[in-house]
Image 1 (cartoon, one colour):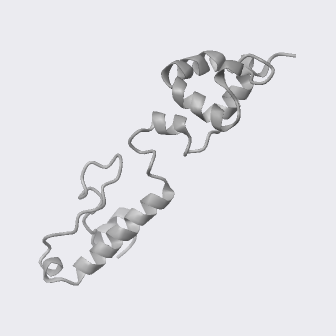
Image 2: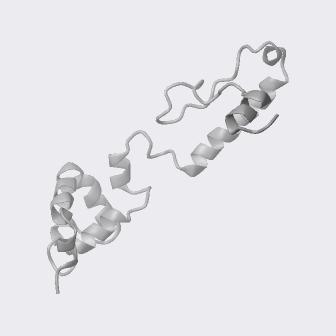
Length: 138
């Protein structure tokens, strides 16, 4: 019977490259699981087990944080809180004279991967334009 890793090219080689780049993070994650990197290649910790561990580490793991230094803190709950904050700021602003005059829009909470706080606020499309886009009869 063939070894399961041999059917997928680069299994051990990609793990080896990952170990070279993020050795301390992987070592820390293994320690939290009660394992040690020096056990790799023994019956305690084989390459297949290391692959499964690395592949399914949670987003709070040291490896994930090392591989995603900017965005590792931004999980779903942080994005939702930022959206709630932005919505509340917009609702408060919408009832002001500035809103009536279209000025001083509130800045959005900065998010990883978004260059400017203004990028997410677009312009409204008129009903006629939308009907034309959808090819609906007016």
